[in-house]
Length: 332
Image 1 (cartoon, helix red, strand yellow):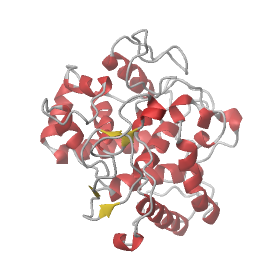
Image 2: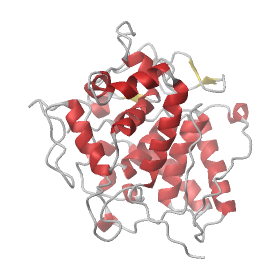
Image 3: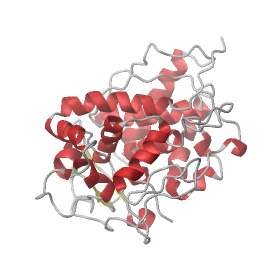
Image 4: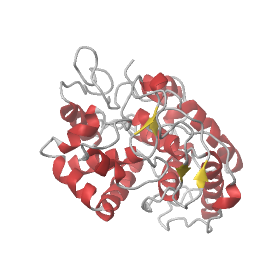
């Protein structure tokens, strides 16, 4: 089974010295929905999440987990919540967690279970999205104006259909996507396929390109996606320096899009545009189309030339994705 573009933001589990990552007390946005969950709950959950991220170097898989939960959203579905999918926490249930595109994500959910146990009033949907946003921020990326107070789905009957996430490469028949999910994403071109997937969510070309830039962060595993190498010179245990300047320990393996794949910056775009980039770095069809397609290219070039411009667009797109399909219901 083909796996999704999002699938390639994968887990880099290892242990490291969390003492080297002393952070300021995390700030929670004032835009907290007035649910039973309190600001103290959210701050406590964030502190636990930060510790997990920094001890385990698992930021990339947390981004992938949150995106795969949110990325099922279909803006055309007007039935009662949560029929349209989105950031509703349904990915924690079978059969959704077992969808082909979600291979390996059960481990990410398990890593976050202690957070839910410690702060039961914080929804899984909030925990998943918080872990994603904090992963980006702790890796040197932009601060994202997150909103919390999401309601959770309650069981497998509320899982999203399989087939709504994008493919990175075509099938042997030369097609991307398929007729499954809530709407067909099938197309003979990578750019056409990406638009069918992301337009269904209500996202535009700039947001597609900005979100693609998150491939600067993480690795693809051949035994999960069928793409990339078993390991490269950048993932074979060689030195990786994090955004704070300290060396990261990680389990070797996989292929990365960038040389410093635990740092969030605009190097994805500089690498994709560089014909002389190291051949061991990934350049998939859905990556290369960003610089070929007339609608995508202006944004890809803009983000290549300006990290500030990329961060500004990315933060907005990430926030929008994180709220797709979410229900923020006041309780008290």
